[in-house]
Structures are given as structure tokens and as C-alpha cells.
Length: 529
Image (cartoon, rainbow, N blue to C red):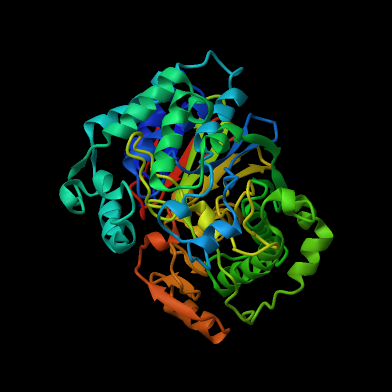
């Protein structure tokens, strides 16, 4: 799939075609890009439940034409009872990946929806929330066709998930993994979405729905309680930005790794590579990734605990110094500490050029595995990334926000184009962003071709331990050999693999023409009119 879809009145891309259609329906009904994005996010929580859900976190970049984007941090912090002693009492040296004690942070996604809708409230007459959530509710009530990825990941992770409270009742109907193409209904989640439409999104944290959620969490054994929910609020933040040849790039500030995504492209830009797909391109981006990750892993986390402002690492002097560390011929010895995780990214640009780049996640597939019986909410395990130490990087503390791999991206070009782009894929997110952007913007590939082209991943993802340089096997064998000769520990994977994430992008040209791309590795689609 290399042809790039085009339209002029509005466009949506996401990793599931039904979710993209939900967003398009909102645009057709006169809704804004933000309202469409909420519809897509809600639908993804239903139709792609192994990848995302309303029990997770979210991050937004929202931009009006000619204005810098607004970032929304919808990340929940650890509950007030989440302490080192809690895990010591239960005999844990690390936070478990699954189960109630992995469900140790507030789910911030829903308040992110509320804040995003507040940002866009003055753009047009707001649509009723019930209309925005209508498609998600219908899919939850009437059932979704199970995707191949849902079946495969449920089988792959079944040993970790089958005994977690609530998982079997929701995602193993009849006690078995639902096969691809079968129908999965989620009536409790449908009822929760209906309640949100009726009571308002704040009810998730400080209303009647919050009381039900808190009771569910308590019965399951999660340390998050009603006071933690009530204390949560999403926040608007200035976006990070950096210039590269012909464009200004934007990404989300900490606790996300958006800084690393920007650093990779800014460092690569300094190498002066002029031709794509060869050794200089791929090796250059990989080595830029290493330099960016060394900074990220040393510095980035909850901004309240950081010693320096993230934007300071994008100063020219800092970037020039790091670029000088890159050997154009040899690989820097690796591995380094890796950051796992998964998620969904979605993008919307409406007919007025208002743009959204949004990402939401429950961290690992199905998050903690904990599904709240009264509400049907799958709760995230983002807090499993906390370190059980007194202080330092990502140390667990009550109220602290965990480090996030999530980061939505935007670009504004000197020629008047604007772009939203992103992907799922944990450690691979900044790398895939760099691959897609460099191919499209620096080396002239078509947008869909840039997303479809073979990708790489340095490090681990999806909770795996392997930290090799993974390549899809479609790369030129001569390039693979050159990378090995340069010292990269290369591992070849399938020609198309979800390990490389589910990417997407939308570009708006100065004349209003829209171009979109979706990832053939996903179940996604570009929906446009």
C-alpha cells in the first residue's frame, strides 16, 4: 500500500478503521478536529482493547493554523497509598507488571478528553458529548469483530492475564480466547460510556461514576482510591520545539519521551545526510537515537523532579556537542537501559486546518489486566515502570507521575505545510517518528510510502527483554551487512511486524489539500471527505 489518500474537507487516521470512521462521522456532522479525536479515542478503547482503553493515560498536541500547539498532559500520578513499604509488605522487589498492585496510578485519559474539548470550545458550537461517544457506545453494546492482533496477543500473554481479576469475564468469553472475526461485546464499558455522556467527563473523577470506580478498585486490591481520583486534573503545557531543515518540530514535554523524539531528528539533521535509505541515513538515525536516549534516560521523568527544563536540551550548543559524539562509520556500544510500552496514536486535521496529534495507552497489552466488573474499565499498569528506590530517576513516590514512552508529534514547514504524525511502540516511538519524518520531509518519499517502508527498532518493546537492533527483513541485504560490519547487533524480524509500531500521519498543504497515511502493520485506515 503506497498510494497516499488525499482530500480537502477533513481527514482522520488511526490504527483501527472503525475508529477512523467514528472520527469522520464527527467531522461530517460539523465537529472540530478535537471532537473528532475524542470520538476516535473512545472508539479505539472499545475496538482495540488490547492496545488502549479509558483506564489509561493520554497526551495531546492541539494546534490552530498559525499558532503553536497546546500540549495537554493527561497522565495520572501514583496513589497516595502507593509506597515502597506497600510492595515490601507483599514481598515484591519490583512493581509487578500485572494485577492489582500494577494498577497503582490514576487513569488520566478521560480528563484529557475534557481538557481538549475545553481548548476547542470556542472554535464552533460544541457537539453534545453523547454524539461524540455514540459510535464507541454502539460498538461496545453491539459487539466488535475481534482482530487478528487481539487474538494473537491474548494468546501470547494469556499466562500473565488469565488470573487477574475481571480479565477472564471480559476478554475470555466462555473461558476461551475469542478467535479472529468472532464478536466480543463489552456491555459494562458501554454503560460507563453512556454514564459519561449523561453525567459529564468529570464524573469519572469526582461524580457518581467515580464512586463506582473507586469501589471496584478497592475490591480488586488496587491501592488507588476515591481521593486519588478526585485529586487528578489534566494540565495544559507549552510544547517542546526544535528547528530542522525546512521545518519546526513540536512534541510533548516530560513526563513523555517527546524530548528524545525531537533530539533524534535535530541531531540527524546536523549530520548533513543527503540521500535516504542508505547506510548514512539508517546508521545516522540509529546513532542519533543512542545520543538522545542517553540524555532521556538520565534526565526525563516527572517534570516536578527534573533538575533542568527539557527545552534546554534542544539548545544549539547542546545539540552540536551531542552530534559531535556520533561516529559516522561505527556503532556506539549498546545496549543501554530500555523503556518498554505500547499504545495507540491518532491524528485529525479538520477543514479549517485545526490539527490534533494524540496518543493514549494502558502501557502493556491490556494494561494491568485488571478489568473493573461494574464499569468494564481495563486499568493501566503504567506505574509498573516505577523503580522501588528512595530517590533518583523514576523512583516510586505517592503522587509522582511515571515516565512515559508516549509522545505525539507535529511539524510546521517553511512552505506552509503542517503535519501530525506518531505511532505506538514504546521504545520504538521516537525511532519510527524519525523514520517517517525523515523519509517524507528530508528525502521526498510519498507519505504512505514513508509509513510503509521497512523500519527498525533499537532496544526493546512490548515487555520483551531483547535489546538488539531489530530490522524488518525487507531491507536491502547489503545495507544489513553494512550495519553489522559497523558493529550493530542486528536481528532480522518478519517483513511487516507490529513490533515496529502502528504509525500514521496527516499533512495539510498550504492550499488546503490533505494527505494521509496509515500503517499496513495495523488494522487502521485513513478516513476522509
